[in-house]
Amino acid sequence: MAGIPGTAHEDIASRPGGDTIFSHVIRWLFISASLLFLAALLFAPLATVFVMAFEKGFRAYIASFTDPDTAAAIRLTLTVALIVVPLNTVFGLAASWACAKFEFRGKSFLITLIDLPLAISPVISGMVYVLLFGLHGWFGAWLQDHDISIIFALPGIMLATMFVTFPYVARELIPLMQQLGNDEEEAAMTLGAGGWITFFRVTLPKVRWGLVYGVILCNARAMGEFGAVSVVSGHIRGLTNTMPLHIEILYNEYNFVGAFAVASLLTLLAVVTLVVKTLVERTGYRRR
Amino acid sequence: MATLKQPTALKQPSVLPGFGLTFGFTTFFLCAVVLIPLAALVLMTASMTWHDFVKVVFSARALGSYRLSFGASFLAATINLVFGFIIAWTLVRYEFPGRKAIDALIDMPFALPTAVSGIALTTVFAENGWIGQYLVVWGIKVAYTWIGVTVALTLIGLPFAVRSVQPALLEVQRDLEDAAETLGAGRFYIFRRIILPTVLPALLTGFTLAFARAVGEYGSVIFIAGNLPLKTEITPLLIVIRLEEFDYKGAAALGFVMLVISFAFLLMINLLQAWGRKRLTSRVR
Image (cartoon, rainbow over all chains, first blue to last red; front, side, top):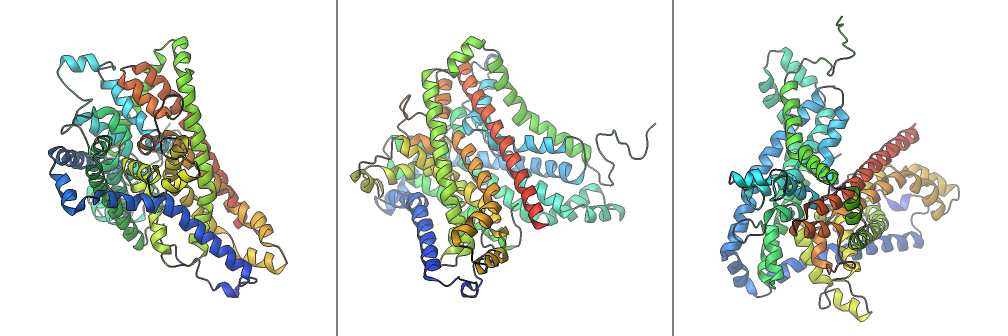
């Protein structure tokens, strides 16, 4: 929603009573209150991440990434994102095609269900899988007999991440596709294009910016998820620690340079996410 | 006999193909990833006796965690209500250097992993931190107290509050404000009679969204909270502790309580948004 055009900039002096001392005082008060609030709550913590990461110099910062556990955490996070984001993207495309192109009973109920994970605490998102596959869960004994590990292993981390990031692509695409309508697709079909060709050549280009938007948000959340993954991971160093979990361990060991070094990577990821988001909005795509 | 309109059919006819495939895939995936696991939680809770359920859900430790989780979330959402409005107003109505950058940065708490904001806030607000060192002179301890929990939850909810109010403020008809002013209305009167009615549904939606998000928040809170039972232990943390003790039923019962409350919020948000839309359309006419 960055850069809403045509606001603020109307000539204030032309508005009746807009040029009094009082209005200047209010304006000054509002801007300084906003900036102070954001400085304390947002800018100071962001700056802290980098100050703490470089506290013992650039070399110590770089050295913290040579730690094998840190490298393993980064690899695991990338692996999880690489599996989860494409799956949720395919799901988002399928869900938006079903919900935006057709009228059927219970559609709004289905959309509510898709949005459900957003309303649920991340801890619960992880817990539901522990209740299913954990040692004392519904399928715990059976899984143990067959020597399959889901909880405290990659599949559990993947599932928990999938749950948390489930709605991101779908909720971006459904309203967009609904708004853009079906006229072009129907035209393509009557002209003899098949379903897949219509999808790839007509629909996908139409919604591409919304898709990019949804995918980057999904990715940011997938790489940064803490609560849900924390519950299912088991915190095994070098094996089931993702980057956010590794930050926690390093921080609790008072290895602040190491913790904030990993944190700085995730902060940069967040910055990149916001930059891509702003660029997408520049194309005229706006989030509803 | 089947007519062309098929009023009882599940799906209206369409030239476009792929309904069966996409609808089937969507419902299958939804069930596998979200609905069946959630059902496991409900079933696990249902397998408890009523007596056990009440004992877990109303234990002193659980009650203490609700008080902190809901109290701090309410306070944080209220702070966001006030500052969300102030920030949205500043971004919509005033031009100043760096406005666009700040507008983009409002989404930062949403994009930033919660573990990162957790350790960063704790460092800033610790007794020797950039801000904490000045507060401690006044006798205010933020980190490892309920104030710290509130600070973390305020940061998490901020984008929801600002982004709800911003579009509503754009809808305020400047002509009406100008007309009121030429007719001699005071600033406060204009605010109360023109601006506030337009943005009220958005303000309440932002408040509810921020509150709902805060209640379930875990990552950013556990670093800055002291995590002492009864005092600085949030409900999600208590659930994690129960799970680590392999007390699955206890954890499921607490999770069930939170789930029910989340659904109540979801319903409230939907009603508020419907109310907001209705008000907006009736005003345009």
